[in-house]
Amino acid sequence: MEDKKPKLHYPNGRGRMETIRWVLAAAGVEFEEEFLETKEQLQKLQDGNHLLFQQVPMVEIDGMKLVQTRSILHYIADKHNLFGRDLQERTLIDMYVEGTLDLLELIIMHPFLRPDDQQKEVVSMAQKAIFRYFPVFEKVLRDHGQRFLVGNQLSLADVVLLQTILALEEKIPNILASFPHLQEYSVKVSNVPTIRKFLEPGSKKKPPPDEIYVRTVYNIFMPS
Amino acid sequence: MAGKPRLHYMNARLRMEPVRWLLAAAGVEFEEQILESREDMEKLINDGSLMFQQVPMVEIDGMKLAQTRAILNYIAAKYNLYGKDIKERALIDMYSEGIADLNEMILRLPIFPPDEQDAKITQIRERTTNRYFPAFEKVLKSHGQHYLVGNRLSKADIHLVEVIYYVEEIDPSLLTNFPLLKALKTRISNLPPVKKFLQPGSQRKPPIDAKTLEEARKIFKI
Image (cartoon, rainbow over all chains, first blue to last red):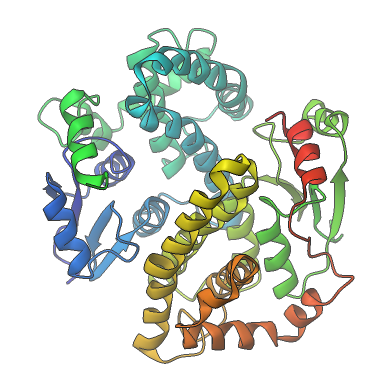
């Protein structure tokens, strides 16, 4: 059972699964994907009792059907040495990841806002990034001068932060203008071999959400 | 740094209550620094005590922990409420996250205007009865053990029992068709530290009222 590749169940787009794709890729783990395209497919997963809370993301891994993004991320991080060496490092990574996920949440929800609200929300995202989140990580990197956020080795915190930085840069290209350490960090983490591979064309990294993705999500998840 | 953990939050449940429950269930005495005004909040921010300028924050073992989940996970790990291995942790995480989703719906309920209350309560009832309670009843039925994971107490049991109490505050009948959840609630409630926490005079906070909600809006600027 442990030899099978993990199988991801989600629509063919970023959403809440993208962070999981990032972490699997960073850990060098190959995975399969079963893309949800219709409400009927979701219903089938629900009726078959494959989804503990009737929701996706769901990842079949090591004989389990894991749901809930954070539990999936933690399991992969734990298994592949991306969660620090001890409880102290683990807790730091946890805090950094939780903060970053709060910021990423704004990005995930963005395509589903009313068009009138979308531009306003980009401004709000930028403000949160620049005033609340980036200064924390800039200071961490400046203070210890190491390549990665915690314990001088790649962790879940680096993967989630890089994902978030790149997603923000798609909307706000100069978002890192005032953060020289984060700029350098972004390049260094992107050059970790497994991550570099994931950032190349042809990988399982998904493109920015478009109208087709938004429509697919509505079709699958909205009550009929 | 052998002092008691110190919780920084306002005098309300909201996002700190699961931390209070977990510490209490672990038999850990704690202190509370109660935020009473926006000025109190700004002082903490300006002190540099809040990693992302937010509460909850818990001072524990020389650290100023931020982010509710990170706080809960640290406490659980420290007091052996996080399972014995990576797979048990995954189950505990999964269950905790589902419970947190239900708790979030209940927590947010007072924020909605009066004309939306009924719809929101209906949604909570529906999710409780059709999604969350059945999932956990099934877990308990599947192994017949006294606790959700690994035949021993974990954070998942504490969080679940906490949210069962909140569901019952909305409508006690919602627990009717879930005998194993009822039994879990009784069992956990009878653990000496939990029993103590459930008694009047403990640090457990009451449901939010209009005055406290107004206070929260001011302190958190929402």
